[in-house]
Amino acid sequence: MRASPLVVFDLDDTLFLERDFARSGYAAVETRLRERHPTVSGFADLCLALLDAGSRARIFDEAAARIGLSLAPDELAELVETYRSHRPAIALAPDARRYFHKHGTALLAALVTDGPARTQEAKIKALGLDRILPCIVCTGHLGPGFGKPHARPFAIVEDWASPFRRPLVYVADNPAKDFVTPNARGWLTVQIERVGKIHPSHAIDRDHAARATIGSLDDLDACLAGLAA
Image (cartoon, rainbow, N blue to C red; front, side, top):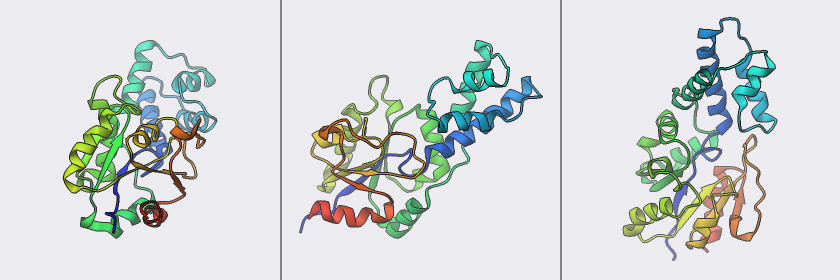
């Protein structure tokens, strides 16, 4: 019998909705903005609407312009810092909670996540993942250029996992960067397609595509059993 795969998770839009972090961050930004502009109202909702419409860059600038507010460079930098450093009001997706509860202390799993290290660590702590997962790699700690799809974060997990002699599987959401490297390194790959996710689901070619797709972590164990057969 083949050993069961050791699961390595992505974070955003895999274990929780990134949109929930954005909503939390925009609320913190609006609170900070009101310290200088007490009459500001609806800024957070406008930012979220822009995100839902596909905007990813300069959301604060665009939202401010729409309410007739001009942000000085120092104000904008302060808002970005507030967004990145705030204590997020987020929770694991219900199926992620069920998955971790089902496997309990027997779970041997890891995490590889992109983004500013301080921001990702705040998410990890808010979700309680630092108490669940024994191996966590925030690519922001590795320095510029080492985010996915660079091989280094995956190699770090391989070094950690080597004593267990089990195949590795990366469960993530974004085919633009999540699967091409683990595919090339012989990992299994599973794409989760959550309702409300931010990034597109379509892979540009077979190298970037996951081996399997699920809509919920409730389906992960059966999916892995099929891949490992």
